[in-house]
Image (cartoon, rainbow, N blue to C red; front, side, top):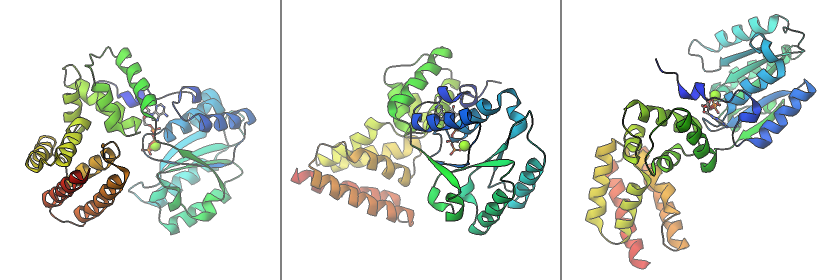
Length: 318
Ligand SMILES: Nc1ncnc2c1ncn2[C@@H]1O[C@H](COP(=O)(O)OP(=O)(O)OP(=O)(O)O)[C@@H](O)[C@H]1O
Ligand SMILES: [Mg+2]
């Protein structure tokens, strides 16, 4: 079977990590000092949290990193007690190869209830002589203060379009992919800062065995391409409601997109519309309201058409 590209191309060293320079610089400082506090890696998916933790362990411990590093998932479905048991087992034995401490990387820490976090805090204290924790989460605000204050916090930003593009270009070259004009732009667009999504979509597209085009990317990613979404919005702004509505139908059917997917894609395009700022603000406000209604269970099609109708009115004023 083919190797999974997110693993095959996952950076092995801190220097290879893309676009998180201030973070990797600080982490290299720990490696030099051969010491660190507990860390918290917060940020959206696919931005390098697990990657940095693994690279840190590699450069901290060299070849014996596996003996001094463990990766656990806080939301293990067998329960937090299983996780705590594993932490205990790992923490009980001394670090190998003369290292001062081991590293426990705990993914999805924000999935823990407050009670479980309280217990985690005690565990962190109990083993702090021999273990450092790296807690990974999407939202640091979901982590209780006593844990946050024990950690140095690192915020992982969504990756820039340029960084994602460069990385994809490298993979395309290594894998000898045939990529058509615009396909990489489409990939970068649907990735929205998430490198994992970008790479996985590219691999899925490649598995179809045809040249990688904008169309292929849209199909495999289950998201409409930027132009199609823009097309709906500009038709509505130009007062062509029926046209906008049938374009909307096409996108919903062709890609099987939910109302929530579409409203989010529309939201990210509003800033690019050629209308005045006041109109943009009104549109953003309206989009928020419609998204809420869709989430609450209103009919998606009616809500999205209501937004298009509103855009027609805005278009008349511009
Ligand atoms: N900054 C980056 N530089 C290079 N590759 C990256 C970067 N971030 C992510 N990737 C790629 O995306 C894949 C997933 O990244 P990683 O596992 O580090 O994400 P994460 O931030 O831990 O996400 P999650 O919140 O879902 O756990 C990696 O295998 C790697 O191929
Ligand atoms: Mg991760």
